Length: 320
Image: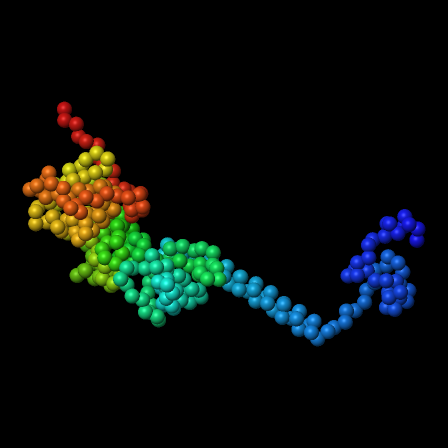
């Protein structure tokens, strides 16, 4: 071949090319630029490695398909209650056996003071689905979320299931106390009585699930004075003064003062979360004196407890 012809020839690649003299050993009539086909020698070791590699690929694809199937299944259950068995506890985080999958309840989603036993079956609120990693399951569970209360009452109260009673708002300090506001959507249906149940059976079913967390059930009202007064239950409120900027002053009898404020200000704090109003609880006999722990305002994150039907202040009446 001339120098120009050699320049046009492809560079020799041992993986794709074979010398002509070697090619003639396989096929006597072999020519330059001809494609040569020949059977590949079988080696036992090559066959074993290929089989193992194929097996690993197939198993990986099966695992990926199974994970995707489980993810889709639980995505449809997001925001619902599911049950599972406590599998193990690591650094305060609880791993839950859900049957086909494992869920995780982070420490901050547990109920304070609640002790979990391996093998114990519990209910959980399915908080979210995220990407699974080698260290963390993708199914995130909660027992302290306010929506867990909503779903437990839905399971126990037929009137909530058929939408004749609606849960308007929930304020919760998990493990201690919860307040829920309910309203009737059907004439003649008592929303509070429906949630309490005959001899308290329905509300007791919920509190038993929560480790005897106290629950106050009050009737929701679009009248802020009535709603704020009811939210301070079990205290009896005499007067509610509506002030500017979603603030209110609640006056109670002297003997109801500690009950209205609650231990560590908990009762008034939950009432503020429930209503979305800053509430100042004072004694009816000493309205000028602010009480220690008697003022509770609503933080932005606490307004999550409220629904879209939040209570709006009424326009003041103008005397003619």
